[in-house]
Length: 354
Image (tube, rainbow, N blue to C red; front, side, top):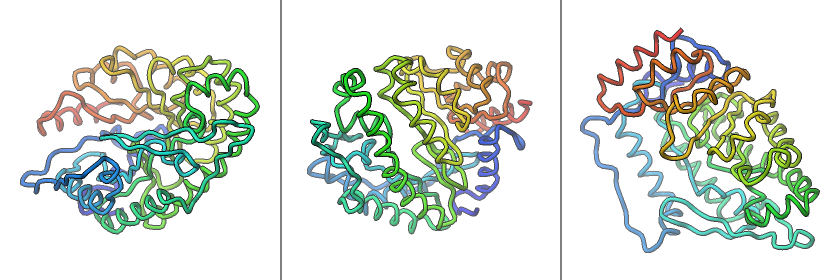
């Protein structure tokens, strides 16, 4: 793979693939970018409202290309354009209303009565067609230059939470468990069809698949998650939602679970028992980040044979090297470093991690 913005892209891809295989070629992957000296300013534009801002995909594609061109990629972070239309876009394609904010979007429930209301994927939905066009625009602009990723789909339990509203879904867990099981099964084939429609475009362009979490694989991969799970017990999670997550992991060639916040930690043991799951992204709450604070969580994940995605404070490099094996570790950020020489020195230290 050759990218003009990243001359050593193939070597970085090899490190990403080694991560998935819980192996190390020469060192762990380190996803760090640097500002490009003399880069042109990234263009901006004013809008009457947030909806216009989100849906102006032609300008957003131009803006993304400029942003990616303003950086250097000397390590393992790829230049990647993310065709984002918000975190519940799959639910919008299935009938939910959609509202736009400055930095995110919100869905409006459309299954008010599960006995009469249905939600089905509509590949002719204007927002589905728009995201297809957005992806095509970025693939064309990025040809030989940068990678275009998948969008943020949020299927499974989070999709049901969007269809019903999270508080109502909590009640459904108690009163309508069979509806939940069937709704998850019904939505799976639709999600896989939507995933395939976009993944096939990217693979046909000769690019690896990447999601909103920028780890690459030359085949089907993604980030299973269930943010709703923090609102229910381990027993409820394992009985209602875990089977669907297992099936989703089997669908991909590579998968990394997004475990979001301390409220979700109670489900970690169940998640680690999924044979097909490759890795875990543990996300502490803001203000509690760092490696040492969560050392035992990371060690438990690694003992279970899963890979790790870690935002690492640079001051904790020695701690991680003494606490974990490098095989299957992906350093997503070196927090606290901005000087290129300091970053190079930190990466050199990580190269001695054996």
